[in-house]
Length: 311
Image 1 (tube, rainbow, N blue to C red):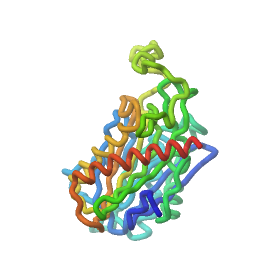
Image 2 (spheres, rainbow, N blue to C red; image 1 turned 45 degrees about the vertical axis):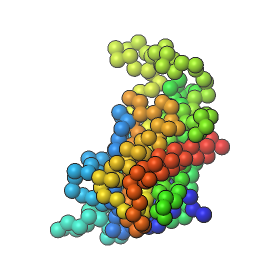
Image 3 (tube, helix red, strand yellow; image 1 turned 135 degrees about the vertical axis):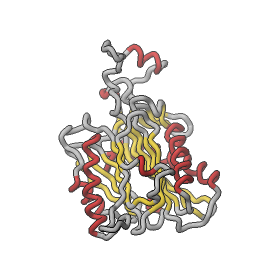
Image 4 (cartoon, helix red, strand yellow; image 1 turned 135 degrees about the horizontal axis):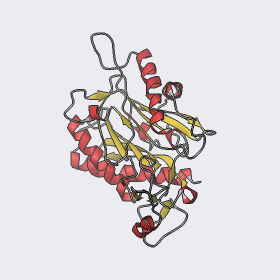
C-alpha cells in the first residue's frame, strides 16, 4: 500500500542525489493540466521562487510542478531544467506565444555538509523530472534531503542528520498526503515527545544556551546559526477539490504540523515553507477535516524522514 505523496493519483516524484557533494533536488510533477496550488513561507529566512504567485489574490491558479532543492539559493537553478522538461511535454500555462510552465520552488541550506560548490543545477532538475514516478516515494537521505541536518542550535558538530519523509491518510474518501524535508535549526520529536533527531548534546534551558553561545559581534548573532541556514520544506497534496484560498488555508495548517514535532520551529534562522496541491479528482471534504489531516500527515512525514535519515 502506498502511504506516500504519490498515493495521490496523478502526482509523480523524482530525485536527483549527489551523495558525494551532499546535495540534491526533488521534483513533484502535477498531472498535465496542473494542480490548484498555494503556499506560505512563515520562517523568517526562506529561499523560494514563485511564492508571490501562490497568494490567493494572484490570478494564476495552477502550477505544473514543485521543486525542493539543496544548494541554498544556488539550488533554484534546478527549476530551469524542470521547466525545460515540462515544455518538451507541452505542459504549462497557455499564453499567446506558447505554454509557460509554472514551477514554485524552495531550497534548504546544505553547503556545510559536503562540497559547498556542489549544487543542484538545471541538468539535475531535468534528470529528477525525467525519472519521476508514481511508485512510493523513496525517502531518507535522498533528493533535496541528502545534505539535510537537524538540531544545529549548539553548532554543526552536535547536529544529526535530517531526512525526507512522506505520509498519507484517507479522509472521508479523499486522500491527504505530505512530503517533508527536515533541515531544521531545532530538534525533531515524535508525537509522544521522544527525541527522534537533533542536537546530540542536551541542554536544560535552550533559551539561556542560545544567549551563552552568542557571538560578540554587533548583531549578537549566534555563530553557528546564521540566518537562512535552516529550513523545513513541506509539500501537501490532496485529491479533494480546493479553491486557491482553501489551499492557502491548508498551507497554514501545514505549518502547525511542522511546529508539532520541531522544537524550536519557525525561528529567525529558519525558512520554513509549505506548498499545497489539489488534483481535484476526489470527493469534496469539509475544509476543517482536511486541515486536521494536513497537520497529522505533515508531522508524520517529518518524523519518518528524520528516523530514516538517521538509520
